[in-house]
Length: 433
Image (cartoon, rainbow, N blue to C red):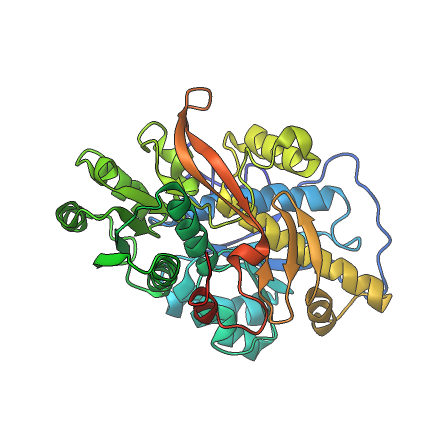
């Protein structure tokens, strides 16, 4: 897989510009042999969908490097059940209609065994019913909206990470602990499912945990707008104590670059639900004191301590050595998805005593717990994974040359996810101090 891509995102990573490319991992000299179960295919063909062009490409870059590193690792160890993985890469840019078309092509023309991916909430909501129609196992790695598994029952779609409500609740609890005298809040978010749902959950959580909090601004921008001068002016005029934003990727980088010189971070306490992902890109530009929930992934490259966690050490050091960049939260979420799919296949193989059907893999996935650098991930029967998370505050690290997370607080799964059978916003509306 090395050397296949040409750079489009930055010097630290080579990646696919557009279209589809089939990748076959290059195997090292020594390969761990595995007995192939009866009925095993010649290869396990998996689609991987993420942003590889446009402002969202910083996310796709991390997802692709994590995929490349993991698939090489799995294939060097014999693959899954002795079957090597073959990856088909698809660019998520282009909008929901394009992704529906691409999913149909992956299923009907490429004949993939499963699909991993989808960062955009708009895209994952669009493809979910199509995945059900085509009966293609789809493991969603990042898409945050709680609606994916709540709007309708799903059989073939799984999400291996927490929803946006986990980020919102974690941020609300953290800021009220750090600044219990908060009186006013405002939101600056993108006008689609991810931004709307993130702000709604944060607002409800804040008003539930501190009923006297007043909302003084609700600002909405286009998807990856890239220009935020008007929104920054309105926030400076409103002077909220706290500003919540779920901006991400290139849009978030631009927002920080535009807001910093105008003093927004000095006037208000800013909270970013996706801020950890851009720290390495912003280098010294990200101010100290910004509260960040790295999508409550449960890990980033310094937490848990790699020196005390072999799985974390292998991923952090291996990823940095190969790509010159530490894994960020999209990389960890991608790890969760691939390792969950692998664990489900291996459990199904063991249960069936042969190569399993898609339905048998689905059954094995439900209720499955597996280990990742982020800790233990558990897949509920409703196909929504739950796990713990972390929140911290930015602090410049001369050693690393960019801001890292300080004063990190670790949260349990019960702290940031509703119990099975409870609607997400109903749970947020019942929070207690």
